Length: 105
Image (cartoon, rainbow, N blue to C red; front, side, top):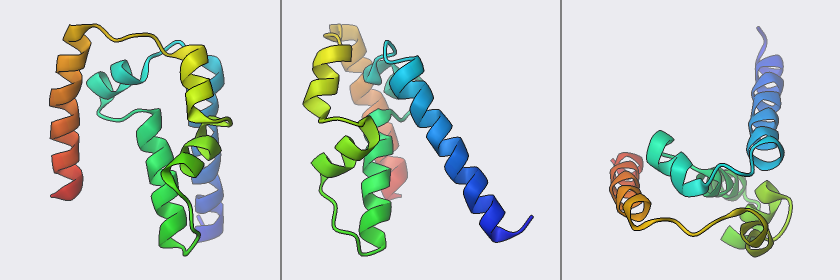
């Protein structure tokens, strides 16, 4: 497979993941994604921002989130996110600490 085709397939897979998380399953909470998979929509938006910045494209955290979420993050949160239980918040702290350590290591 040539490099351009591989890039196009990767981009298509990313777009499908984004559609799944944003349109098909907005009911799945970010905290649940993080606790189970070690990443969430916010991670994906940050990776998008970091990729833009690495290519010399200035993009803030808020701009990265809006690009990924398709709307301002606060609007999406108000429409889709619910309050997390204390148990989920405790599990999130563990998952976040583990995954931030892996990214920096």
